[in-house]
Image 1: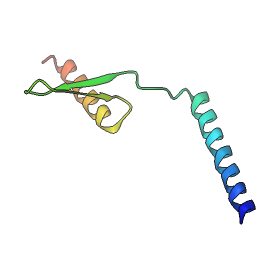
Image 2: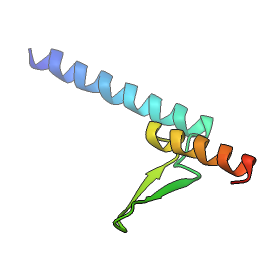
Image 3: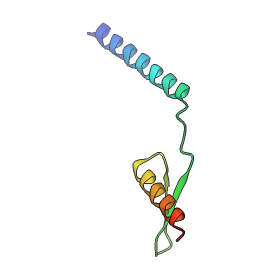
Length: 69
């Protein structure tokens, strides 16, 4: 049983290392843009553009800039 768990752990570590290497070689990095939302009460929330919520707001803001509002 210990041998099986050790092998599973090693397999997981190798898979994680392979995924990290692939991500690095493909150039996946942190978000290039940050979306900052300011609410009426003065509070703010920042979202990275590489998240789903941040991507939605990034797309909306680009459309607004294109329209010229």
